[in-house]
Each structure stands twice: as structure tokens, then as C-alpha cells.
Amino acid sequence: MSTSDGVAQAVRERLAFAEAVTRAAGAAALRHFRERDALVVESKGLQDVVSRADREVEDIIRGALAERFPQDGFLGEESGGGGQYGSGPVWVVDPIDGTQCFLAGLPTWCVSVGLMVNGRIAAGVIVDPCADECFVGAVGGGAACNGRPIAPADVADFRSGMTEVGYSFRVPRQPTVGFLDRLIDAGGMYHRSGSGALGLAHVAAGRYLAYIEGHMNSWDSFAGAALVLAAGGWVNDLTVDDGVTRGSVVMASGRRLAPALHAMAGAAGFPMPAAPEAGR
Image (cartoon, rainbow, N blue to C red; front, side, top):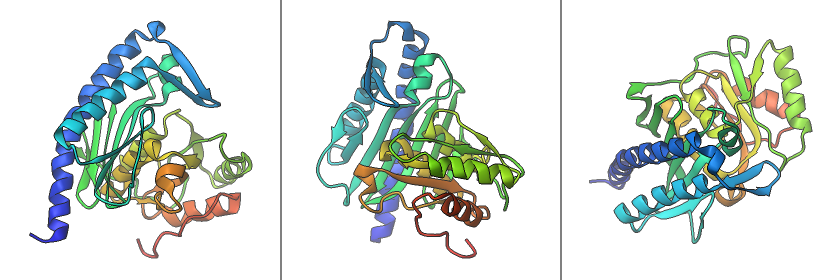
């Protein structure tokens, strides 16, 4: 067996296990969601809150992965991580992405479990408990929602659907404002759901045309990016410049729309990742 075959087999094995674990974690999160008035909430800063539900759900995921794959690395939003992330399998986890929506009783939150292998995004599982949907994908192996194959929208402009636009207080607001202005001028429409991970899953499924945000942490973005790539779409490289620990600008879309998304983001003043490859 070649090295690449061995990596692919390792990813498949982990993805199947992660799907079961993430579904179980989603069920636990949904129980907390239905009883959220009893949760104790702490603030970690502007835009960032955490509840007992976040910690308990991450404990479920981390414990199950550690028992099944004890040599794998782990980076979680609540419990952190350690060591090097450039070699071997590493799990990147947000137990509840969209915690503010979760605590407000809005259904736009999810459980996000991403997998890196040797420093590259390799696979992801995102469970949306409120919609009873499970998105699963491996880069190079396709993506599905509840077992049905998904793909990004095959369009070349912004007029035929919605673009999800996230915002982070960690970066200046002007690029986001400038992008919205240009998007509207191009005949597009924007949306903000409150969960970047779920927004990326919806790009993978062709529900949104594109996603853009000036900064996302790896635990918010890696699983969704894996889904977009697995489904055949484009995402900028989120691992460059220590993106695993520092986060990154995030852009994602179908392949045909990617050049227009990249150009519009640049004109708006976003930090610019490498452009999509010509003809891809």
C-alpha cells in the first residue's frame, strides 16, 4: 500500500467514527438547547460566550476520539490543545459553533469536527441538530448531507442566490462594509446566520453561493472548509501563516464563482490569499 493510500484509508476510518461521535454530540447539544434557560453563561470577550453545554459537548467529542485514536492530536475551542499540528492526524473541534444563536433560542448553530492530516485539511463533519442534518466529507472523496451527495452552486456571478457574509471584531470593519457594497452593486444578496461553520456547510451544499469572513478561528472553519473542498468547491488555504492557531480570512464558493469572489474581496480591502487556479 502506498503512503497516499494509507493516508486515505486513515481518513476514511476516522471520518466514519467522527460521524457517529458528532451525531451523538449533536444530540447532547440539542438537549441542552431545549433546556438552555438553566445554563450558566460566561463571556470570553466581544462576540465570544461559552456555556456548560459547550464544555460538556467538547468533552464528549474529545473523550471518544482519544479513546479510539489515542495518538491523534486535538485542538478544541474550549479545551485548547498543544504540541505540533503539522504532522499526523489532528482533530479541530468547535462543540457549538454559533453559541450566541444557541443561547438566544435561534436554530442556526451546529457541532463542527474537522480533521487535518500532516498539516492539511482532510475531512469534516458538521451536524445541525435543529434541522436533523449531518454533513460529511473527505477532500478528494466527495461530500454528502444525510447520505445524499452535495455540490456547490455552479454559477459565475452573484445574482442567482445569497452570499453568507460573516463579521469578526478581531479585524477592521471596512473590508466587510466594502464587500457588502460591491456585492449589492453586483446584483447579489447577503445573509448572516450566526454560525460560520454552518454557513460553509451550506456553501458545500449549494444553498449559499459563497462565504466570506475577515477572520475565523480554525475550529470554526476547518470542518466547513473540508466540506466545500470535498464537494468540489474552492476555499483559500486556511493553514498558511500559522492559520491553525492564529486563524485566517475565509473565502469559499463554487469553482466558477471563485475568481469573482477573490476579486471582489480584494477590491474591498480584505487580506488577500492566493488566487484560485485558472480554469479550476
